[in-house]
Amino acid sequence: MTLRPLLLALAFATAFSPLASSAQDAPAAAHGEMAPIAIGDIAITGPFTRATLPNAPVGGGFLTLTNNGTEDDRLLSASSPIARDTQIHEMAMEGDVMKMRQLVDGLVIPAGQSVVLEPGGYHIMFMGLTQALVEGETVPVTLTFEKAGTITIDLPVGTAAADAPSGHMGH
Image 1: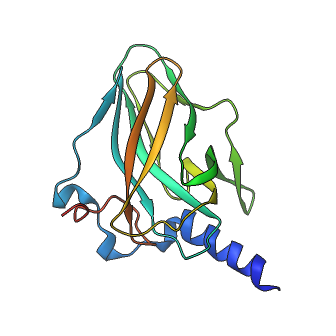
Image 2: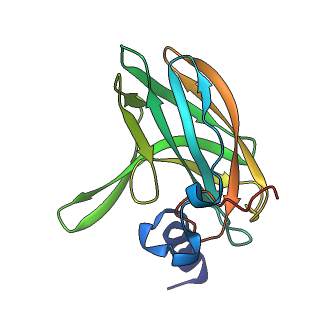
């Protein structure tokens, strides 16, 4: 195996594995989680991303979207200046194989329900990173919803193994 495929495999495993977390990456609720961000009927909570290794080609973005409305909405797209391409993805088991694919039609946020974008599931995929994601910094992401509109939020960068936003960011 050459070095490049090995680095790509390591980058994907670090960015999206739900098994990479540790006890010290406990949910931020105990440390004072950020207040929800609202656009239209959509509330955004718990945004975060993971630190990457230098020259890592990909990263992931995670958050919870709650639709407080009476009609379904759809996350149509995401973009960020830190990547050449930003997509909405899902990871799912197909037999014994974990597969990742782009949701080209976006992600439905059902009325009155929440959809969690988390490691190992739905996520925002940063492809072709233009910079390393550094713990303690933030990453701007613009989200466009079918009905709620467009909003730019900051994803705090946690540890490389974070599975939730850290309550220590920005302090």
